[in-house]
Image (tube, rainbow, N blue to C red; front, side, top):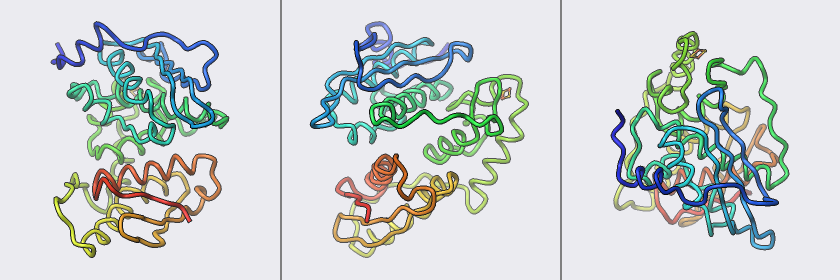
Length: 276
Ligand code: FES
């Protein structure tokens, strides 16, 4: 039996913003009933301000999947699209007072639905999954997703990957491949979860920004053929340039938002990232 927090129970028993918005401006449809969890997120957006006026979710899954998607709608309503994209799967779990480790995949599904709904709102066509990239056939999980979730959540073991993506939790045939991906990602150094220091001098702040970009951001972008270059730091403004596949990418502002999010999490809440 899972240990759920009171907030998870509340959001499961009386979920908020349930259903589908009529004529939505963005739809994110993720997961699959065959795999056990599915979530459809619909958004109503003010096109002048890009502010999310309403968000509703329809979820098939367990108590934590329903609570996570309901929490997501509460977290993003009233935010602009760019602000909403700062909401990570960890934010969803934290909003609920935590999720059982084995249920973290529910928060990941919420984040995925958000990305998909924003991409739909922005008119970005759905990526067609390449057959060769599908790593876990039992749960339809791609290698790219495993890399992204591992880096974003500092996951180092196959069991953790299973908790966060379900990959490896079926027949087990993909476990060796997951192990190889983790070895590849963390081949230089097993990640220590960085702790945000309390007070930094300017020099320490610059060094920490460089370290976070090198250790936390570049591996994620390079896994997709992209890259990032630090151009300048002026006070709390960090100027970067996206390189490789990230250059001119339709999702570049999503990438910049994620970089800003990471620097705010690990360096300072005041950081603003701008692209050159
Ligand atoms: S292929 Fe991943 S668990 Fe079966």
